[in-house]
Amino acid sequence: MRSSSDTCKNPLDHSDSRMAEKRTDASGQFVWIPFVEAIVPEVDKERREMIITPPKGLLELNLRSDTRSKKERHQMEWKQRKKLHHRFNVAKKVLHEMGQSHLLDGFRIGEKDQKDKLAMKIVNANLRLFQHAVQSVGSSSTRLSLFDFVGANSNLLLKNALKIPHKYLLDCAYSEKNSELFKEGLKLLRNSKAAIILFVNDDRNFGEFAHHKLQKLLFDYRRFLKCEERNIEIPLIIMTSTDQIRSSEQLLLDNDYFGFNAEKVRFSEETQLPVAQKSAGSDKILLKSPWEILEAPTGSGGIFASLASHKGVEFLQEMGVEYVQVCALSEKSAFGSPLFFGQASSCKADISLKIIEDGKDEDGYDLIFSIGQMIKICKQMDALSFQAVLEQHEHVEMVDGEWTEIKPSSPNSYSLRCSIYSVLNSCSIDKISIMQVYA
Image (cartoon, rainbow, N blue to C red; front, side, top):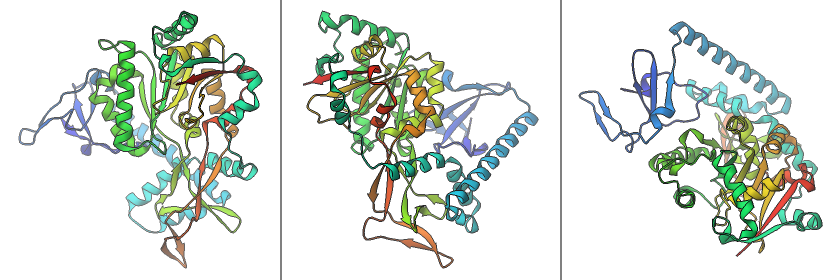
């Protein structure tokens, strides 16, 4: 067994976690294992051996077969480098057209790894979405409120709304009046026709506090479905910040995926866009260092860009998913509620909204999309509307040929934020259903 330091790193791999690699036989099969104490508790340096205790299903999940010859692997690597080089040249051209050529100044100095880091940042920056976001801010600065939207369309939306107490969202013994909805939703969940996208990272939830809430939520849901002895066949995407991806993965590994099927669980990075400032009539992108673009999360509306960038929709389609719940990590979440899915299915809704009657948890968004509507939104990112949030950021820029640290004493820039509710106008009112929840 040997560590990944002996292997060639993929420049497009965003994960920087150390991995232990095990050659299973001479056929070229490998198993990749996170190099953490919980899974690799013992390392014998003298005997050059490792003792591993992988969670159930990890070896099968990560087993891969590569029977290609050395020549074929080199050809594939060359094609990947060529593709990356092409993407970089395209991105450079776009930066020139946008008037953002200053982002390339870092290539004049620094070590090779620093220049490579900048190249990857440029290649992976969602410049098209950034351009749309800036234009969106310029055309409208009004934030779409969920309750303003519902209020403006109350005659159509509320007449058939389902009103239930919050405690019944995950109650198998709910009244006979709604038993058919519950059964319909439970059938979708059991047949993997329903999926959940859980957004872990927002302004209120971060670090250990977020992981504590995530652990409680998944444990409670496991108990609800009474799946202690078998996997939960529900596709699950956990979307969080780059900094929290590794710890979120570890949390699920340490808890045997809380009963979820590991093959149907994915982790995705939330969308970030460059931070900019108004400069001589342009929106100048700021640099954190000569080799790093200053970026900020886009908020809940960035979920669609993340799905599009990381082939999340394709993953859901392959699973045969028909309805997708998108929810924040909130105590009032209807996470995986059969009743919520059953209502969406029975109404044949393209978007189903869960609203809290007291209106105090608008940031704890909870929506269900038909897979068709999800695909439509991910293909039409121009439908998203953004707001500019004024902020104060330290940054660097080239002044008189020298890199200078700028430490502002007042707000000097803005990040681009997008609410998930900005997609409501993309759907016909008669294809939206409402679930009203009260205490």
